[in-house]
Amino acid sequence: MPEFKAEMAAKIVDLIYRQTGYHTIACDRGGVIIADSTNTCLGVRYDGARTMLNSAADDYGVTFVTAD
Image (cartoon, rainbow, N blue to C red):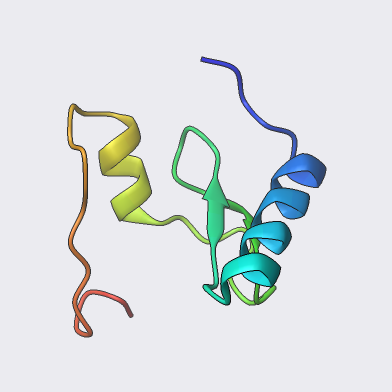
């Protein structure tokens, strides 16, 4: 599976935000956020992404409690 460079990932999340109004992140294979439309979470490991990338999970539920 090819991996996006951070610069390309930033362009993609910014495009998604501009077109939809939904904030978006992109993570590397380890679940570390490499692009963030709010520019507030760069470098943070996101366990949901890590779970999805390392398993057969199609989705990952996030609640207010687990979001922190």
